Structure formats: C-alpha cells, structure tokens
Length: 361
Ligand SMILES: [Zn+2]
Image (cartoon, rainbow, N blue to C red; front, side, top):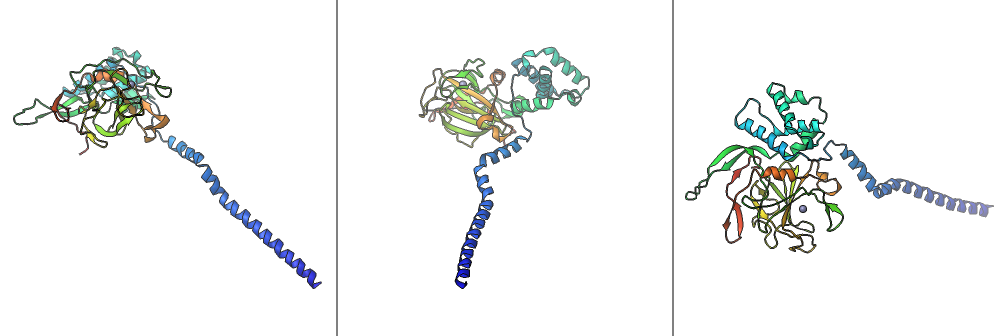
C-alpha cells in the first residue's frame, strides 16, 4: 500500500511537472506571439502609418498647362501695376488661379476677354476674395501655381554697369522677373514640347523635362536661387545638378552636363547659389553606369522641375514633375549675361550680380 501510494505520488508529481511545463510554454508563447506578429508585420504597420500621413492635406498631383500667353499677360499686369504704383496691384498667381477655375486647368481655352473681364471686376472694386469665395478649386490652383511660380516675380536688386576701375558695385531695386533662363545670354538653343515622350534607354519611362539643344560648353545658369542638393554622376542624367528652392517646394534638375568640365569649379553640395549664377556647362553625358561618358546623341541640357508639397514626394512613386516648356519660353524674357573671367579654371561668371531677398542671411 505504502509503495503503491508512493508510486502514485511519483507519477502525480511527474504529471504535474509536465502540466506546469505545458502551461508555462503556453503562457510564454501567448506573451511573445503579438511581438512576433508585430515584427513580421512591419509592412502592414508602415502602411497604416503612411495611410495616416496621407490623410495630411497636401497636393498629390499638378498638371501645369498654363500657356505662354497667359504667363506673359498676367505677369505684365502684375509687374506694371507694382512699378506704376497703381491702386490695384495684381498678383499674377491669383489671376492665373482664377482663370484655371474657369478653364478646368486647361489653358488651351485661354482667352484675353476672360482676363480683361476679371481685371475690370477688380478695377470696379470687387475683391479677389469676393470673386473666388464660391470657386471650390481656387485654393487648389492657387497653391499649385504658387508652388511653381513663387519666386519668379518679386523685388530684387540688380547691379548696374560695372565701374571696373573702382570695382564699385551699384545696385538698383527693381520689381520684375527674377528667375532666369537656364541658358546664358547670347547663346542659342532650340526646343520643343517633349514632356511625356517615351524614352528608350533603361526601363520603360517617359520624359520628365524639357531638352534644350545647344552647343557643348554653353554656360548653364541657375533659374532660381537655392541650395545645391545633388551634384555628381547619375546613370540617366550623366553629370547633373539638383537645386532646391528655399521654400523646399521646387527641385530644379540640370542634366547631361559637359564631359571633363561639367560644373563651375566652386560648386559643391550644400552651396547656396543665386538665380542667374553660372552653375555648369551644356554637354552630352549620361546613359551609362560608367562616369564621364558621352552617350547622348545630341548635345542638350535636360531641364526638369519637380514640385514637392510633402517630403514623401521627393523620391519614389509619388514624384510630381511638370511640363516646363511654356516656362522656358517665358524665361526668355530674363537672361543672365556671362563673361569668362577666370583663365585658370576656364569658368564663366555672371556679368551683373543681384541681391535676392529670399536668400537667408
Ligand atoms: Zn531630357
């Protein structure tokens, strides 16, 4: 009896140990399980976060179709009304955004009559707020066009004819176009609206800029003041420069720069450049994983403009590149004259300096 009960106790203890072991394992597994799920579901987790960030309100897409005629006429209204100190000072971005509402963003429909009718209403005392309060897309177009054209017109100081003997710089304050054509003054180029055309090199993709055909070595100038964000070789763009505006909304891309001497010697990543500064030289580099290779058939500057409303749009699938053909036509109005002053580096510099109030101290 004693022996039997001992045997029973022994097996009972063994049974209990096994049970405790199983229960412990179940408890440990059930505690660890959510962590293992979490670790394996990082993608889902990130998606949830990005879905949340997507709920932040920012513009996801812009089709910039404002024609040269509309840019020309509204810019003249803006500039003249400021320079003549008229009672009503027009803001060309407001005028364009108003017209965009009328045309559904399609400026093929642009008609001078619509612009005249708008300025007549403004002259008669109706405010822009009153005119746009029922236009549900006005704020979208205003924000989109402002992102494109924010620094194109404004006040700046420009150097007057240089007194070389005294090396005196005299600046005059002006209100007008302060963005420059990327091709320096007195250099020829040709272009056509090639935005969205198919490209054969590399993966199947479309052309996200405008090609300005010109001679190798043509000085390239910065369209707008900003910070050099990218500088170096890129398989598609060859030697290229990326410049970001100070408000971070515009990224200017200048590609296929000259073999052996693509950039101004003093350019570096992080440098602040002024609108109209010489940044590089036209060439035919690119379409190669190997650096400094001329693989482009026709020498040209590839000029691109990317809009960034949220940093997640800088890289990856959410990028917004706009058609800059009409903008290039508009910028023909303001060219930067350059001179070759440095015989050691063979670099060109701008002839007339500017003081751009948007450049941070
Ligand atoms: Zn191109």
